[in-house]
Image 1 (spheres, rainbow, N blue to C red):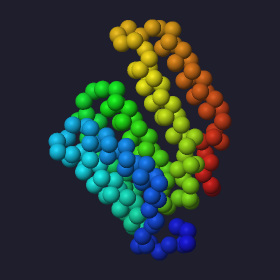
Image 2: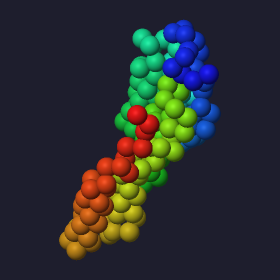
Image 3: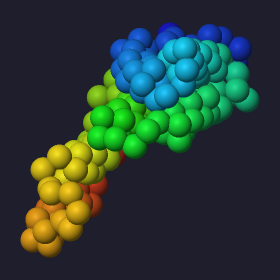
Length: 173
């Protein structure tokens, strides 16, 4: 039975792959973010469970608020985490998993996470550029040529993607 024929109070299916894809990096980020006694991991699990529960309810008044607990947990971990390359990578990975989970809404047709991959590719590319810049460029004054090359590559990719809007909009009408 698809979602257009459900009665208003029916429970929607939970998509376990995108839920697990969100839970693992967010729980890891919560665990290492600096909350004492593993509270970060508990907050992450509770936020994902609450978000999934709000999303699974068939109530139109509650399901739009499903991303809020997960986003609040992600923001709390990002604020509380110490500055470091590993923490920043986990934050970016958690944010990408959050975007994939958002795209895999049970109210939409199946395979929403796969259809969102071209759209999520742009933030993933930005994360890859930022992380590789932090790893491979020397600390302090960044050589202008390398920074210019990264900027040119990013602009060329954005121009390519903007020129092909069908890459982004693969959702059924």
